[in-house]
Image 1 (spheres, rainbow, N blue to C red):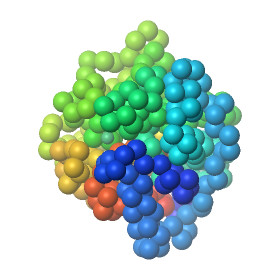
Image 2 (cartoon, helix red, strand yellow; image 1 turned 30 degrees about the vertical axis):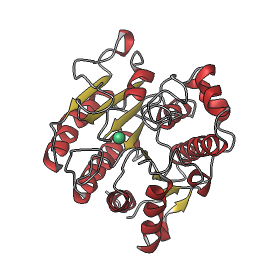
Image 3 (cartoon, rainbow, N blue to C red; image 1 turned 180 degrees about the vertical axis):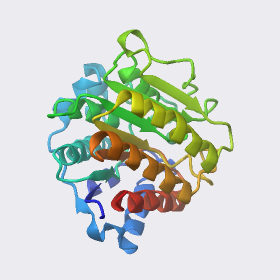
Length: 309
Ligand SMILES: [Zn+2]
């Protein structure tokens, strides 16, 4: 049986451009959507509508100073960031209500580096690691307000460590954060010794992979460590920070994960979601800067989400 899979996208997220030739460009998302359309992958997916006004949800993760630094900034950046969040919330809404089995949020700007440092924190002047609002963290908090969703597991297979997400839930035993990344790369966080703090101790797991790591290293991390964590944690919902800069040939990464590798990782997460939480799985686009490569990997991911386990 095939899944009822949602696809969240809005052209509003394409109007924003940080600077000419910036790697986090509208073209990367446009190519992904073009390829998904041309190959027919979107024919039997369900278009997800935005939650609507996402602004009231921002304070679940971000402080007022951070929120205002973005809301008072460039119009297109503000619109894209709020729309990305609205689509993320809409996806969680439709999967947690049972209307959809799973969903992929094809959104930008990404979110997993966003803390509370304001819009102009990094040298490129594009938020923290190209991120403004932490879509996945805010979506996890929103999910916990819905019936039957108490424990949320977030896995992050982006090449970079999801430091903003780790920060958001570091002391929180209700959200388990699991990340693979290259430790030496931006932002330099992701130490495997950081296991959470206070009541959150034991609910944070960093698994750095070596430079050049490929399908086997990534699969091993998820099949062994993420699966063991899920078995212990027993999540009500699984969310994926689906960054595809961990793909082979990405200009910002060294990993060698293939499109087939992303299919396998996706299938594994679907199996864990089936086992623990009736298949409830939502993934959010994070990085991925080889435009054609991103399109191929994301389509492989989406194709697998649609197939029944
Ligand atoms: Zn990344």
